[in-house]
Each structure stands twice: as C-alpha cells, then as structure tokens.
Length: 264
Ligand code: PEP
Image (cartoon, rainbow, N blue to C red):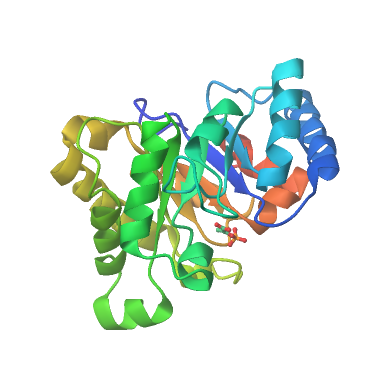
C-alpha cells in the first residue's frame, strides 16, 4: 500500500533522551536483524532513527560498517555554523557524521526551550545549507485547537518555518498535534489527513506544486502498530514520526511493516 508512488513512505523513530551510545549500538543491530528476518522491503518503506547527539558517531559507524538499510538523523541543530554557542551542535558537524535528517521545531523544543517560529526558520535554513533534510515539526495544542480550529496553527508554523527557503528543496514535514504526543490519544486518521492536506497546500503556495507533490508529510502522536495502517491509508499522510513506540523493537518493527498488517 503505497498511496502516492512519488513519495516513498518514511517511518522515523524519535528516541528523545533515551538510550546511551552503547545501548544505541545494541538497539540498531537488533532492529536491523529484526527487519532482515521479517524480510522488510527497504525500497518500499524507508526507516530512520533519531538518537541523542552523543550516539550519532556510534550509530554512523555501525550503519556504515554493516551496510544497514537504515537512515539516521539528529533531534535538533544549531542555527549557527560555529563559534561561541556553548552547548549547540552545528549542521556542519552533523553532515560530517553523515546524518541525512534533522528534526527541527519538535513541540518539546518549542515548549520546553521556548523555540520561536523565527528560530525554527533559521534552523531549517542552516540544515539545508549543510544538505541535511529538515523534518519540520508543526502542531497545535489543545487550546489552539479550541480557539483556532484544526489546521490554523500548523499551517502558520509551516509558513513561518519556510520563510528563508527559496528554491526547490528536500524537506519532510511532521504534523504532530501537541495533545497527541506521548498521551496515548492519537488523532483520528481523518484529522491527520485534513491537516496534512492543508500543509501540502502551504508547500504548493510557497515552494511550488512539484515540491508539494514530492514532499513527505508524516503524522506523529501516539502512533502504534495498531493504528499506523489507518493513517497510512490517507492520501496526504506519507509516514510517521514515532516517539515512545520507536523504543520497542518488535512494536517499531511492526509499525514499519504496516503494509503486511492483516486486512491491507
Ligand atoms: C514524538 O516524540 O514526536 C512523538 C510523536 O511521541 P509519541 O509517539 O510517543 O507520541
């Protein structure tokens, strides 16, 4: 079930602040074995993991040495290239580690670290400068939903995030309603589709129809093996950003293999 042949589905695991570099090595090895044993078709569904910064070198070395069919990325990036920015990590450093992706504007960064739309936009520009694919996270809180309705806030956040992006680019957008992250209460597939369609409209307005057609829009928020297939049936949902369930190998592997679920 690949709804749009122009877009390879992406299942991305956001580890948040879990698993140190030794645990990361064991985890990635086991995940790769699990996918191999279950004959996962890597061309049909791309898999990416997003470990903490301190794990990236170990994950890079393992994936490269064993030629594992997994992509990886970081959970954040600095808007700056280098200099007096204590505690920050440059896109140049991530590119040196062969990261393909970087998550930008996750709701935990926006709320716990007060990241503004402007900072998110600067980080998107920095990621693209270093040939990293930004996974731009947008999503409304429960209050936003009540006051502004379903798509207004995610649409405004995406417009703001793309402020510095001018030409055709490789980006991923993740619609993650704040109320669904880690709550066990996922959006309905219809809700996800409604917002994803609105976000594709923003991509078309700002970057053109061609970019809009090829950009993957993920849904994130309490995704599990029991609900992933319903999201993936929606025409504008091209994958998932998975938090908690991405730390459980059988569960994450089952999410990745959603095409094999009974009834599809
Ligand atoms: C996330 O961390 O981006 C996320 C969606 O978390 P969870 O899947 O646990 O809701």
